[in-house]
Image (cartoon, rainbow, N blue to C red; front, side, top):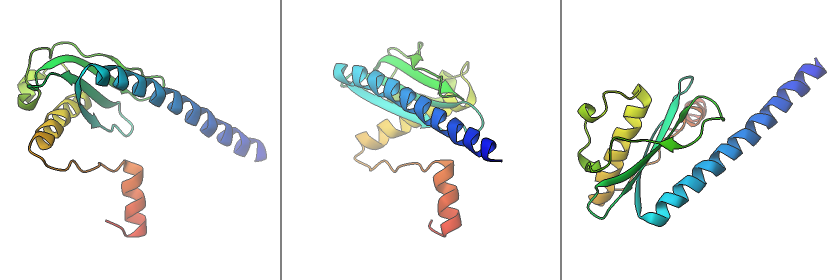
Amino acid sequence: MLKLGLFVAAMFLVQALLTSVQISHFNQEFIKLRRRGKVACGRQSGGFHAGAIVMFLIDENGIIREGKQLTGVTAFARVKPLPGFEGKFVGALTEADLPRHGKNLRKAILDAKDTYNKVMNGEIVPDKPSPFQRAGRALTGRA
């Protein structure tokens, strides 16, 4: 029983280490884009499916110059190029622009569009709680 507990604890530590490496990689890629201009981001958590984060480097008019994506289920996922959006206006992306992408990646792209539009209209973009945060809030009675 003690061995099982130590094994589970070791796996949590390995997962935390791999996750911190992934976050560091994402931050480096975000900083590279941010140094070149404005960045519109969108995200969609996946739960037990592949989650997605997208970043669009945009010019002063909201035209996409470059896209990047982080999709995957594991901490081994890395930021990759997201081609096909160059020259499009981020605030007007629709489902018709996304036919060949997975469900969560499509939702993340549309989230980037919605976030961009809210920021441009002066609205505050609320944080999306993770599934664990929502579960914790439900258990503690906080909305």
